[in-house]
Length: 482
Ligand SMILES: *[C@@H]1O[C@H](CO)[C@@H](O)[C@H](O)[C@H]1NC(C)=O
Ligand SMILES: *[C@@H]1O[C@H](CO)[C@@H](O)[C@H](O)[C@H]1NC(C)=O
Ligand SMILES: *[C@@H]1O[C@H](CO)[C@@H](O)[C@H](O)[C@H]1NC(C)=O
Ligand SMILES: *[C@@H]1O[C@H](CO)[C@@H](O)[C@H](O)[C@H]1NC(C)=O
Image 1: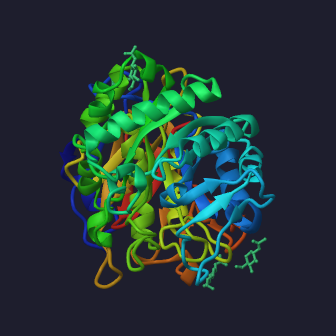
Image 2: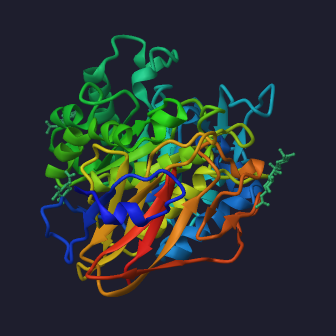
């Protein structure tokens, strides 16, 4: 990335403070220009549903299907889902119940401490047309019950991608889980994972069926590289891929600032590289802005929406195959993309990321990750650039004047390019509080997730292969090159 001071920066938006343009060269072909290129999954942006809440999302939350269908309309592929979380290790399969899930809670906002689920739970998961990862219980140390559930998952879920055996097992001692009653550390957990992977994998008669890992504490201590080192060939054949969880946290400003996001993903680089050397995938199996359902002042805001966008793009660029954003208790979930009655602001950021990567085969970051100004380019199967996403992560709280940053792209085809802007009044704007979040002039309806408003593109003329776009602080622009 080069910083080109001068004319370009001066003639844009003279009414607001401006600085020199940042400039990014768009490679004309994938593999060129000295950039790193990540191969893309057909649907890198996924959703994770907390185990006990999954039936409610699929039977009693209208927006669920529409929010997922909106992405399918962009990519041609239903987004991948994962069903799991803390309550997967509190759940036991009950072959006799005709209910999806059985539990009781003192308040609707609570997650159950214990629950059972029936075969219908898996049948419901089998109605989804996209890929499904199901998380089962290891904590309770009842492998026969987990094998029975796994057999049901295999028979009922047509698009079953993988099974998890345990969620965030590093916390088992704290949670009083029986399997961790003796010594419990990365090496005992690895031995346990390996043993369960073989026993469950052989019981269901499927290799390449396990999503291994699933920790939240950072690698390398809790990481795929150390787990792989403990696996023999028998175990390896049952592992389809590896997953890690991540909740970066922080206030809105820290969360949304691009270099912070880059650093939070770099933590996984060595682990990702080790897994990919073994020819397997690495995913963020469960992630979102702030752990424990999100933070009220952070997770439902436009700043968090921009974080969502930047985070999944940077994760994809760093070779995470898929990123599953977690959705917890319906009605008690600050980071959720949608609820029963209202729209969640982070959905807009995820939507912009899906729109950038839709149908693309490769992604690169044009920036070095060291300033607040980010740029990603997506390439099609023929290796041509199709879209570029620009992100100004300067924080705008809503008070004082809002700065504007010119972004210059070079190496563009002649003619014009069109763009869709992701914008809102400030970093604290919320769709569920009427603060007018929009992407290309459109919004998503509360409780429906149906796009409304006129779809609006802005047009920019390319001259000498260059075009300059002004992005206000806390704003993003998706540029369509074709
Ligand atoms: C759906 O959610 C509403 C609101 O919480 C609740 O009253 C109703 O019982 C739920 N219905 C089902 C089928 O879960
Ligand atoms: C592979 O490891 C498992 C436990 O992780 C063990 O039970 C099995 O005997 C090992 N197989 C071989 C061939 O060493
Ligand atoms: C992602 O993987 C590709 C190979 O598939 C590699 O060329 C690239 O350098 C990797 N990206 C990063 C950021 O490590
Ligand atoms: C969503 O609901 C909020 C709160 O009632 C409201 O302010 C906002 O205008 C609604 N958004 C849309 C797009 O209808």
